Length: 160
Image (cartoon, one colour):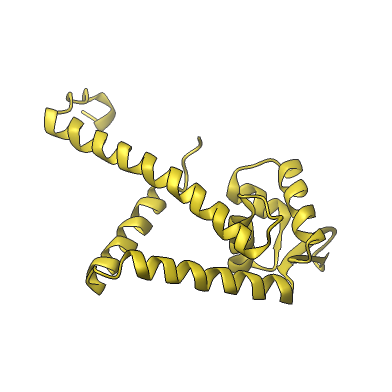
């Protein structure tokens, strides 16, 4: 008998409580993270869209990169990413250069001004995290980072 043929057992009351607690805490975290990201974006540039901070971080992590790769990573359409990138380029935060492997495509990278502003925002973010977690032992901070990474790895292949 295979795993697929075995009927899943109903969850226990304790399991249901545990998963409901995770769902509640994730909902709070996601709402607060969205607001936090919007604030970080404003620190980079006052005209920045709330979601643009994440774009800059990803471009920084993976540059040079194609806009199509960025769209695929974020699971958004090319038209959506194109509009967002246009704003970042107009603000002088990113640059596009021809892709030497494909003349039709462009590679994205932070400009020196984009780098400076992102580094300043990251320093502010790190300061906020240090303040929030100041009472925690370093090992607890490391454990939180490991658990978040482990959870994020689980969600990589999910489609909303």
